[in-house]
Amino acid sequence: MKRRDFIKTGAIGLAAPSAVFGETNIKPNKNDPLILSTWKHGLPANDAAWKSLQNGGNAMDAAEAGARVPEADPSITSVGFGGYPDEEGNVTLDACVMDSKGNAGSVAFIQNIKHPVSVARKVMEDTKHVMLVGEGARQFAVSQGFEEMDLLTVESKKAWEEWKKKRREMTPHETHDTISVLAQDKNGDMAGACTTSGWAYKLHGRVGDSPIIGAGLFVDNEIGCAAATGLGEEVIKTTGSFLVVELMRQGYDPTAACEEALNRVIKRHNGNPDFQIAYIAIRKDGEIGSACIKGSFEYALARGGQNKLHKIKGLL
Ligand code: ASP
Image 1 (cartoon, rainbow, N blue to C red):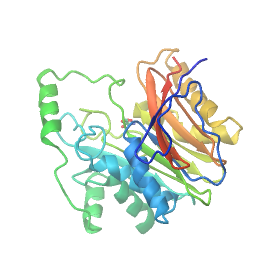
Image 2: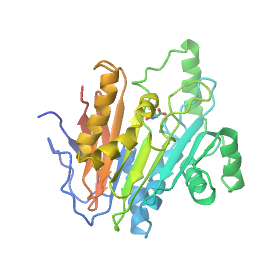
Image 3: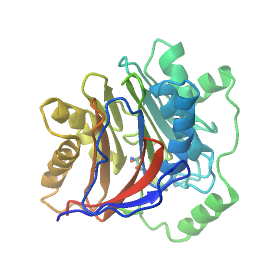
């Protein structure tokens, strides 16, 4: 058996916590809405997304509501408030959304705004554009009533000051934990959201895959949706999330599609890349999949009244 799947029950879980080995999918039920998110902070994100669905929200509402949770949580150092800064001490954030109609919105290199994912949604819904960056994105957010705040916490400042003493280059394997939230609502419509503070202590101005439609996130309501976490530079170079969805279009099941997209990266790095990338994917019929390159990866799946964390092993 190649991979093991450990399950922990989250806050909305109805079932007793259980460990399931060798099973990555709960049998999909066509009419069940579902939320699929990256990492452990996907659990509280899924709770919020689920609540949004219960309150009549659609897939886009749910994905956005989910992504806002880690954005606001200062203990999560890879997303939003409390995210690690760039090498100059600036917290610069990337986020995007995509809905079931193929609309997309994105902000990159935005500073001092707590909820970039909601700014991305505003870009999608209230402008003619897809992407705003940097100071322009911040000004747009302020014009839309988003509050400005210092996103560097005492803890993240301390970590950055510690890092500055040696300026040790963070290995790409250390810098991940973007939250990506994929949602499918009761109508079967799909949407996604992705938000991150990116590579810790990156060069000022660096933008990763997370705000790039087709790289960090892609939704095709006829086929499925996919999202990424991990080394953004490599996700961008392989148009990762778009590739996963296109592979599902060609008939790959969601996990096989994630694996094949990663195999292309692995091949480009002579079979031994020294970094992590993970994908999550939902197919239109509710089948889900995930894969990662190295070590392990956790995704949170909320479906049928349960919210559970699943741990998978890397391909290498
Ligand atoms: N994909 C993100 C980036 O490269 C990193 C992460 O997953 O946290 O910016």
